[in-house]
Image (cartoon, rainbow over all chains, first blue to last red; front, side, top):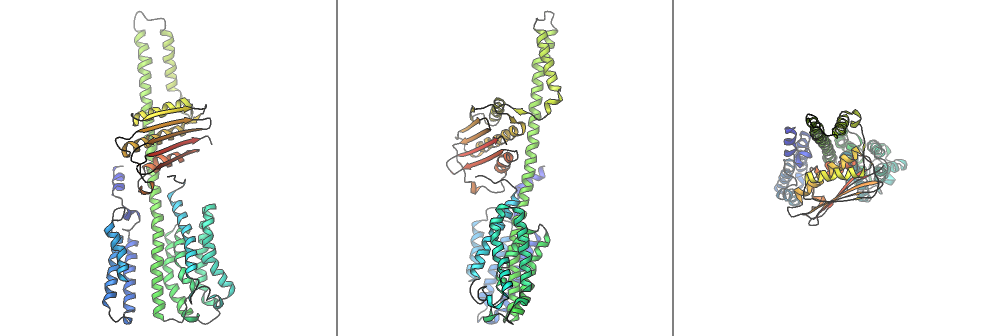
Length: 90
Length: 390
């Protein structure tokens, strides 16, 4: 019974949504690879490539941030970072 | 805050089914015009096929909004039909074309809405195999686009990767919230079982206390009196009363399900109130000779106890708590009210099970029982527990 209480006490929204699971990490990996493929295959259309690489790094960071265990509600700094990343990408 | 009866899983499935219907309206609106829109591609496809695709992508998904209110299982079957129909339509796209390739560099419009079956598949089948639906969108989009469009192979592959990624994300989100709902249901079941265990323990303790009192007040006092040389004449009557008490304790029928009278209900609720919060003020009205089943009385007492504990814990030190019991010929209603801090029901974390399990679900677990909690910041909290004769 004690272990059950401890388990509930440690629960957070990340765990509730299985963000720490293997499929979730696999999805992040797919996201990272897909973005890399998009950037590489369209690089010949760009005159300067570094903004695209920077944008890719930003969205990678935001994706990794999302699947880290965080308390409920999601902290404001993390929320702003995740929301700002796609905006900065544009 | 009135919680609907039903499991978290069912509620979440209902939300996803309705969201899919709304999503279908939005997607169809967005995909109406342009070279990759369904209006422009109408003349490039066989008429029956064009109509069938529109049925699978728009008409049937939108109908889920109404269907889920009427029959949850019916809506789930509807979702299965949509998923299978959507995939079949997508596979048949090239064979249903009336031109070699789509005009003006357009892509099959059905590929713009493939998030829909990817989400619905998670509700339609409670199996890991449902993940095949979003995963197959990658190769399906690529192959169909290579055959149907005049675009490059690279563009088709990139669109396939994009479809795989987007459909996997929305499918995973649907699966995650459904699994979270399952976890909530399991936690609620555990908490309910624990509450029932605790209630049984308290009942046994009360019974032991009562037996102790009978042994002390009736039996021992009679024996003590009988041991005196000058035993009074009333000893025989008192001994008979003591024997009746012993019979009552040992009578197997007393454990059978029974009913409480209105006065007994009030007495029990008063005892619960004084046990949990001696400062709470209790008033009651007896407006009828109602018989309340034991299960309903137990639920009312347990939910009342939890409501009082919540009030004492969260209302604030200076808050006043009132309990009002009203018994009518058809119903027993208990209202617990405080003038404390109050709270926003929307701000209560879904992981907090106290109100849901011990008050709302506990009352909903008995036929004719309901529990509601209403509150707002700064305006106190009001809990209404009621049992109506079914």
